[in-house]
Image (tube, rainbow, N blue to C red; front, side, top):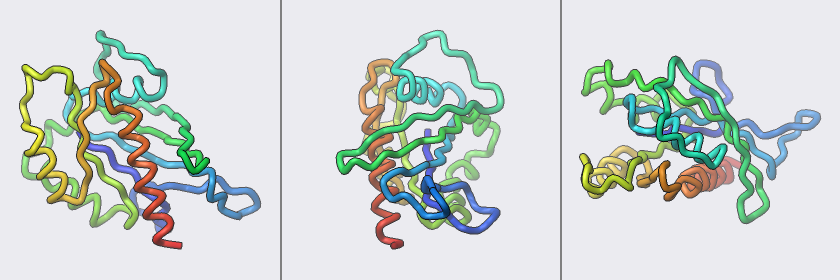
Length: 180
């Protein structure tokens, strides 16, 4: 599963980005709004990650997402910056996409998305050690090769869920400060 989020791109046709909360057209550097999209195969736990992050809940009977769902959550970072995530949880229809195209998705996002995009490769269901399909090192190598960061999570146990979103926010802020 992957997450993509970005800072404002400024041009139409790009992936959505982070928009500062504005008052009278002046950006507010301490209150940010992030548009985040979760992509991944059906059944990998995208909805469960979002529900754990937004509501602090895990539903073992979670149903398959039809189309997309939208939720939001605001976090406060240590520097008092607040980041509001507007999260689009996709239906996981990427499985119908040929394997080669799925492997090229990070490159396409970086090529056509906002230059400030943050990509994360998330290995969910880390609590199911005995059912592991991808070695940790493979995830780390793939993420590094494709300009992403890698993190393992468990929506069931809440391991690294908040850390995932905090890391995305921190990376967006670093990119934002580099552009100023």
